[in-house]
Length: 194
Image (cartoon, rainbow, N blue to C red):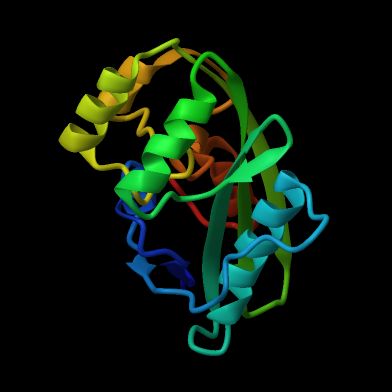
């Protein structure tokens, strides 16, 4: 049986590591697009729009392929938090998040470039932050430097120290790729996993 190529439309080492858990062959490719939120767009809408765009932008390069697009946006009291990008913004994000609960919207798109069939999903994981000190913020950032993570704290690393509770359907979603739903999508495309 001929299997389509599986493409992860991401350069994220976290998403790559998550997909590797499934023990399947795949390639990664960098989707080139502006990841800014649009005015008036909800966190769920932003993450879904970007996940779909990431999958679609690579379609011409990868015919007869299944392309996985994913994006994550954190929402705190109505404000979207993306990747901080640097130390100063990470301090600002973590300071605002202290003692609050955030909703992480992690969107997933699986695009079959051979058929044009597209599946998508948005996972919401609620994360409650501890009431940590400014010194703890500084110590954490110096040790882990999570500047490419939405919300500035990596749950799969030392960032778990900053977190009081996590509530969600899929533990992989908070890291950046909802594997449980991806498995369903791949099965829907006839892609064997076992």
